[in-house]
Image 1: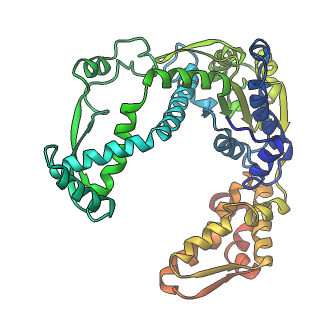
Image 2: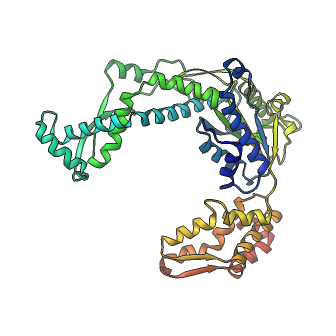
Image 3: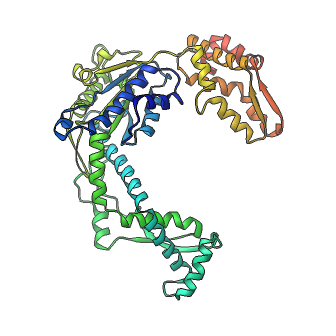
Length: 436
């Protein structure tokens, strides 16, 4: 679990997302509160519930991007799901409890990586012995092994092909029985592959690879032998229960519209299924029961057609912190193009540099790009920062196509160049509706 201060979290998010200070503050405080809760006495710790967040704002202003960056910062189990992917219990499709199962799987991956790092040195030594066995045989004399060990450490044998035995994790019999249309329905069903694997001492398969590539495979294989899977599962469940974060995108799409007919009924059913999850319940997973009381839920939606008040009142009550994200201005577009860590301009410059083409953007060129994006969002459909990708692709279409023939040249994108390539289209609303 990360122990960044809210200020540090906001400044980290600032590197990738322009504006939206309120939303950044809300998620930063929520993340810090996870750490604060861990510092409390056990009795009080159980009583402190996470304050779930609802982010409201038009499309393309940074809601999903905040969640993506938060996942990297959290250092905790994190899953992002689309609310529209789930169906009411009893209908064919994924039920909402799958969210918690996915969260535990992510937790197991995180704990396994952490444990692997702790045993890397021993695993590396064991892997080296197995490579030597493959090269000279297990019965070779110590002198021969030492001679080959020196060559191995001197990278002299990197390209030599060897055959190694590794644990067979895939293929064979399916792990339990999955019922079509009901993911997760194999919980509690006898897992045949695990049972046979244990009975036969674990199956192995032969893999042909080079000495250099074999190390990664063997280190992973040896690490897994040194790990205690039951301990990993216990830690992963504890981590998911106490530090887990679930980001539910497009929650406005399951808000029932006025009338409550047709698909609206099913949408409301998904909300009803989400309620106990957000409120706190116990979900059965193949690793054991998982309590959701202390999982932090962050929901987001554009709410173009529906309103937050169209959600079930009980669900609204479980999302006490409301944050509005504002629409982007021309200045925001300009900053997105120039200030973010992996800005579009930086990306295109790097892509063209691979063809030995030096691509440059003038200040008025950047202004023109931002201007066109704002115009199109106002006249066609407001899709936020995503509009910049459309405009950039259109402007740089010719340069991208001809770049291999222009190696060594310096190409300049100024306001005149931008207007020449998208000016007429942007001005013609009917055309831009289909092309931009």
